[in-house]
Length: 151
Ligand code: HEC
Image (cartoon, rainbow, N blue to C red; front, side, top):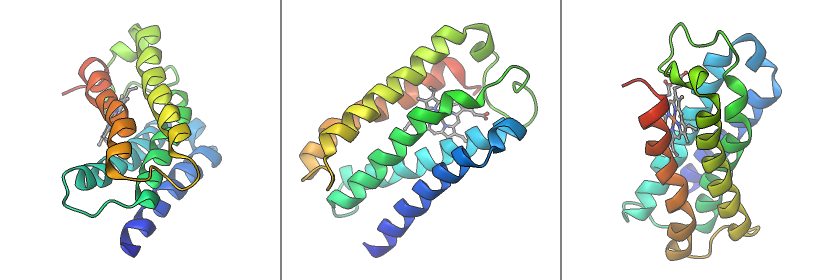
């Protein structure tokens, strides 16, 4: 369990560091990928608990939810004009249909922020309450990737 908590803390630190460093302006592609990797880590942690591969703990649930929430706040900032080339799987549609993309970011932000509010300080008390709030967050991955990420 200690290892899981440390992993959660590292993920949070990563998102924070990315947001604070000004790296976004210099290398938005690397920044948004780092955010997605932290989100993938949180999704893996959530999935393992939901599948019962790992014992649920409110602190681990909270770490995952806080990571999703941070991503919802910053992710949309890392897609400036001209960042559609290079080592990226971001689809050109992001820049062609900005409003549609922003709507997908808003779905992530809304679901994660609702989960955050329902979590309280300690995190969701049990697996059932974790599942209820994290399910809508996890549904946004596929929804956004389908339209806005290259296969
Ligand atoms: C609002 C849209 C959006 C949502 C929501 C979203 N993603 Fe992504 N994701 C993207 C885009 C766009 C990329 C491509 C980024 C790039 O390569 O520049 C990406 C890339 C990724 C990557 C690859 C990162 C890399 O290093 O290349 C992973 C892993 C990932 N997403 C996981 C997730 C998971 C898990 C969730 C749900 C919890 C999620 N994403 C939710 C848009 C989204």
